[in-house]
Image (cartoon, rainbow over all chains, first blue to last red):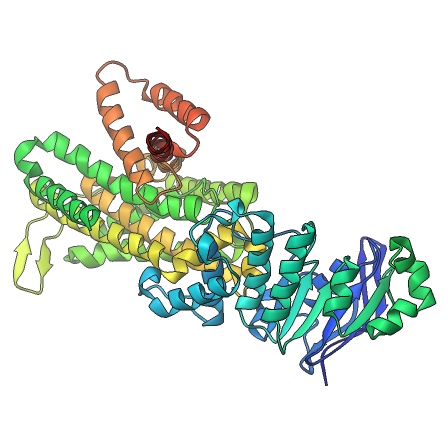
Length: 249
Length: 325
């Protein structure tokens, strides 16, 4: 069954067509990588699907329901999670407080004004547990903006996961990371997204081929090809458009 | 543990001092002190928007003034209305104003928010000035006498007695401040800070930004109204200049910035400093604005986090040096 589906999706920025008749299908439980050259429209596609932008034409279906016009918070509440290419945390809040915001959302605590947050032990415990799982318990009380790059990225990804989404959309989770950090991040993603549906935008082909069950290639706003990693690697069109440039061996 | 004990001792001392204050100072200083206390509450409500939610309200006096005018009108037109409901209705009226404005105000931030709040407050200011039959125009409405405070139908305390009113106002404002402090410590308080720091992320975490902004605006407006209501009773006169004019919009801003917008207690410190300063400066010159303005500029230039921020920086540096050596 498809957990996410787009039908004839178009998006333009003031006349510039960024997405052109995109028909994307994401099956429940799979790990799909979305690849393509810079400016292919990958992040725009994420923004349209997650409700940050509204499609100029076409439809988005999530869990069988049309969600084209929903906003990010509505989509999050029905089980969609998203991380950002440019790290987007609460820089002045500590790692603990960052994750706690997500834990509050997961527990549907939104307008609670009668209890002190510090005294809500269940929330604190749950947050600490997540911090431990992502090896950030040592940096619990450090402001997010002062974390090392790799740790900050890990925090970014975990915040998207902490709301316990059914579909996780990761936008270049390893962008700007060193070799070691990338390795750690891939392990982390694999561990945290076990048994979940993941859509991941990625430039690092090692990451793509090690994480993804299936690859979809986006080129100038259009879907070029879709299939298992081995098939995509041999696809001539994809090689011409993208892989060839990287001289992937 | 030790710091906790110290905190309790400190608060104990503050309460004892507040209790004996009417015995220590004359009525002039008692009234000045109440002015400081009421303005502290007013500045804290502004800081709920400025420091906690990251929007600059340039027209906060509209809530303060609405509270004050509501009290004045109620006391003038309704014979025998009890004290507490009058004040609470003042807050409620200001909260209602916030409810009415919130659909517009939650959609904007930054300069647009500042300009929009300024515009609405000026609109209300001019309306109060021109609608003489009701508001008394520039002369305002004088409060001849305050109703007695009736508690549980047992006690009846005369509120026209300055010292009785002092105790009432101190307890009332302290309660409001405690409620607001608690409010910032609740889960909802942390969501407000989240909206300030990264609204997009809050949206993606599943929080409705407009709801959070609107509720915080209503809370801030209501309590600013309560401050205005108490202020009107203290001054026994409610007129446009004093509760609705641009100066009343600007004062809590200066207090918050001078004390520090990053902390709950910053605006209270700022309110204290400005009130003491005003009392001292007026003995030498009546150009208070010049002195206040200079201090405001200096603080913004050299201590953008306010005096509490400056204190924290110095403390952090001092402790670091100690660790190194």
